View (cartoon, rainbow, N blue to C red):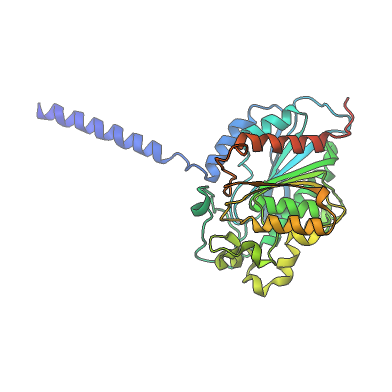
Length: 352
């Protein structure tokens, strides 16, 4: 009897260990692998998708983008294109972090969608970094970081990726004159820079250097607007107020790299040539305080450019714009985003 009891216990323990081992192999929610698994399942729903397209190689490292095209070619000059630049404090994140609703909506409207990876900053190999997940309950994978890379390198990659797409517009069957940009947090900052700065401001890939681009619209959600106006991140919880974060991104404290900080500040590129931009900002955002968006709004108005922007400040909204205030629930904000981007991209396009 004891022998049978021992065998049963052994089987139970073996099964429990096996189940525990299988569970431990599941990717952590919010990790790069978790996002990849989810994006793989989502992209598989569509028949016209190109994955892992190499747009640039730096020091032997390939940089990738994914592009999904509508099932049907609706427009005469090719599909308009929205490019997604991911967030993650310029030191983390992944192109795989595209919400399924986004692909479904835009592809159904005949709009193509591309998601871009870029080099992740770790300029001084700082040992500790205040992870933004502590402030906004968002898990970010700080992985595959290239030592010596600055935020300028990350931005330059995004400009090069955009030039690559425009240069190869015929191959991808997209309209290079109907571009939209979208991103959250650091991705929102990239959106502001890439839509407001001249397209030749950041260049590394000489093979595409002569290619120009101009966006029709941009969607910035919770993105920093300036590194040179300290009042825009004058809070202890602000990501840009953390010295380690900025050394990791810039290679030195902001006070020591003011020329570079200025070059990477979207707010200095305000001009009549910028496209329509929707800025969404949470009033309770502790990671990227609302003061940045408020200053951009103020300076745009002073320059007579208020017509170029729509500013939406979400009452009690955090870094992810989560808010319980009536009228600002997530689905309403999502519709606002979709409507803005779709209307601006499709305006005046000739259908087949």
